[in-house]
Length: 119
Image (cartoon, rainbow, N blue to C red; front, side, top):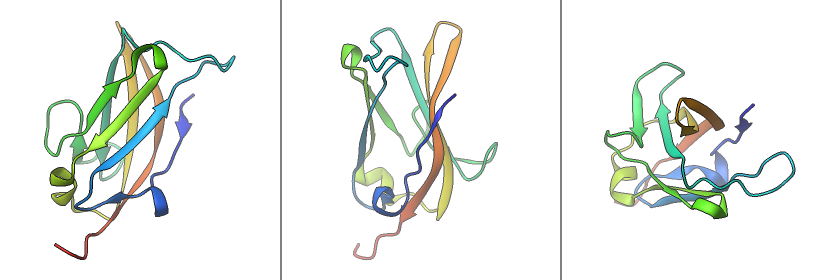
């Protein structure tokens, strides 16, 4: 089962600023999971099954996922240039890791956009 992590309030995406969060994946014993062989993917949509707002799988705006390998970390980054183009209030996302034919959803939740005032 995936963890529910909402990026709202202080954790919201700030429009016009770089968004960066580090996620650490541990197994049920609390040990770091080696992600070296995994492919990572993440999508933000306006609603479940809805329009793609941002993705790591070849669209724009682009989400960059950096695989930390043996450290068990995934760094989620959306550049300031990409957050500037975002235009939503609240959306949904999920983050998955893929190894061969096995897909594991690590996280899912709500994401909010804190609109930029100074441009």
